[in-house]
Image (cartoon, rainbow, N blue to C red; front, side, top):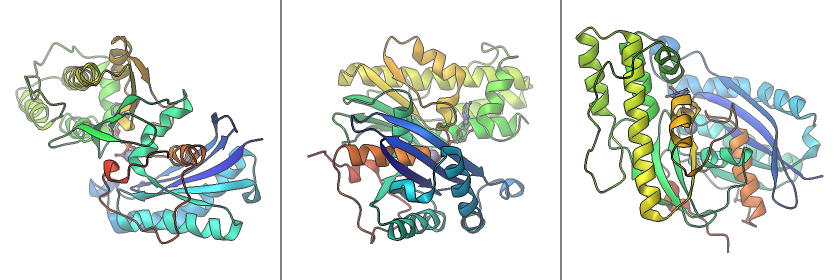
Amino acid sequence: MGLKILGIDTSCDDTGVGVVELAPDGTVKVLANRVWSQTVHATYGGVMPELASREHVERIDSILGEALAEAGLSLGDIGAVAATSGPGLVGALLVGLMYGKGLTQALGVPFYAAHHLEGHIYAAASEAALSAPYLALVVSGGHTHLFDVPQSGEYVLVGATKDDAAGEAFDKVARLAGLGYPGGPAISEAAKQGDPNAVMFKEPLKGQKAFDFSFSGLKTAALLAHRAGAAPADLAASFQRAAVQFLVGTTVRAAESYGRKTVVVSGGVAANAALREAFAATGLKVVFPAKGLNTDNGAMIALAGAAALHTGRAASPLTVGAEAYAPLTAVSHRSA
Ligand code: KG4
Ligand code: ZN
């Protein structure tokens, strides 16, 4: 019987609680993953921070109850609690962070503060053991970061977006093409009926020696094509192909440059089928999170907590606070 770890993520507009089991040999198993995706923001066209915090407060108890029921456990079975401390919306983060700290006090178990992006990366541990060195591409609605992970817990920033995040670009192109929200799944669905050669997109940052990303050019080109009368399905298929080629091409160049053979791809955009196919064709070993663990969730935070425990990292002090901006490279922890 392994240690049961509870994970909580309330960094943005999803209230996520998950439970994982950590076996003594380091293998992990996701026992539960419950997410409440807030709908109150729909009418505003963006996330309203104060409403997000209030919703987390209202929902967190019931989501915890659902997660425990799904795992077939009671609170007394939990051996450690991990919660996201940043980056994210401070008010939203505080709900899960304080809730998690309170639980550890009541249960007498250790507390682990987790970095949201480290959680996204460890979401892939649901599919395969992550053994460094590897490259990690995190592509979500708020982040587009490429890290080199030379050893477990050490993160070197290799590249990042200069403007929009990848998921944000999918969302904006979907909106202008009238395909709905969230844009990623909408683009992916519409693209099935479209011609990926209908609209020509210029490769962003063409010729760069670095490994950065940029999506504003693709977004503007999509707007111009839309105004010129491109069909939504064709626009979706063409944009998706351009975005996927750019993400995969840049990552492959970085893998060659850093001599890495394994790439972890995570975050909401990692759910994209075309992206998965393109990565599968690269010859690299590519690890994606299990279904349901790509977008924000609590299980990925429990998985990050499991990695911390397994590598003997010290528990976090209860004085740890919420941080809106928290670069992953700054909180790197070498497993001593
Ligand atoms: O990781 P996530 O839940 O939120 C952040 O931490 O930002 O990612 C949400 C993003 C949204 O922008 C959504 O459009 C995108 O992930 N996404 C996708 C797909 N599913 C979700 N993008 C492309 N293809 C998909 N299938
Ligand atoms: Zn996220």
